[in-house]
Length: 273
Image (cartoon, rainbow, N blue to C red; front, top):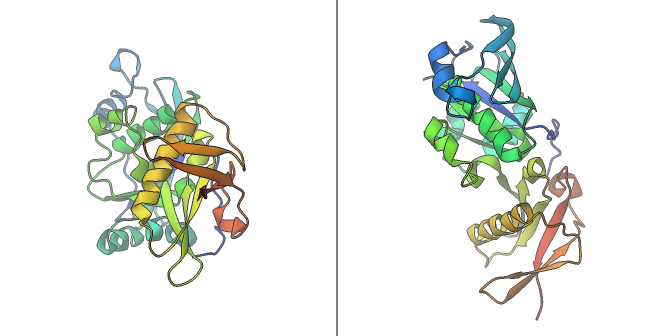
């Protein structure tokens, strides 16, 4: 795929919950307590939802808890096809899971508005609120910022969400998208790094290279840039510990419309020795 995304990524964390039926669920007090009470609210008591409108045809509201403020907007209609094409259909899940998500009939959008400056806490807050809207009709979580989506599985359980503070769930929060230049060669690019104020990364994968190894490389470089708060630019190098391999950061020179992220994209190349 090389077409331009019609709905460009936001600099604000957003997730869309997609449902099998054309009805919008509303969390009850018990669901709010179970899901938001695990997120660090004082005395374990989450705030409630302040609804501007809450009926079968529209959800508009705001929730405040643990110092976070999030907005809620839901409609009993599917997300636009172009969003699904650039998230669900390029996600790494099975064809059966993707087909089910594609057939959704309603969605609720959760937007992080304000509170914590920490992007991990922002994402944990979003997932905690998503937990409160989870039911048997929930088919998946769509992240347009990261060009990806995933089924609910146990990813929205409070204990699992709490673990995201220790270990960033790369397979949920970031996309790794292929852009083919011919039948065997493609660019592999990250999506979603900009939420963490880190440039996205791209690597041209040749036929004899393992894409999974490239993704692991992306993860290691992200950890270094994010945790060490390192600023890099084209021409900088990075030595991979224990391998003797040196990487060179370079500018994007082709497919800029799809490779370039909101916080920029740097190409990774192996240094020639």
